[in-house]
Image (cartoon, rainbow, N blue to C red):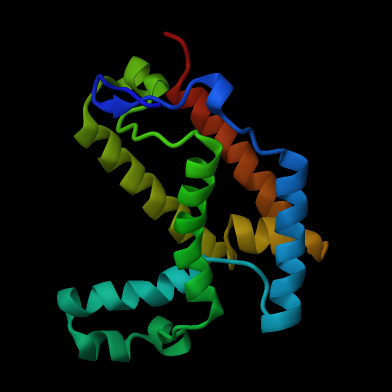
Length: 183
């Protein structure tokens, strides 16, 4: 099934894999978007829920009074609503999907990263964390993330969402070209 080598678990052999159809997955995301609008009256999105959950982690650092007085968390207090449960369901659904398809593996340092930046797990995790902070900050500034703008806003033909997607992809291509250029 899987073999542990070089610090990570290799994925299942090609014959044992199930590759998800991007067309079916796209249709499923579209259907999920319709359901979210119909049942909850909310579009798909995770950065608002992420921000709400962040208040839980801020309490031990800055104290409950500071969190309660923070204007951002006053406008978006923590509540266990559909958005927070959707956020919790994303990694669970991804894990389940990878297990069903036979593609699950634990890979601390991807080969493309290792070739360019070396095998350091710490360096990889710090870079991933900082990248996450930057994209989360940008998503909150933009008023939505890839799911909020890209899926929900794109389905609604919102100009701001299409602009967000264009800038996000252009920035991703530029940063990738810079980081992974050949020497």
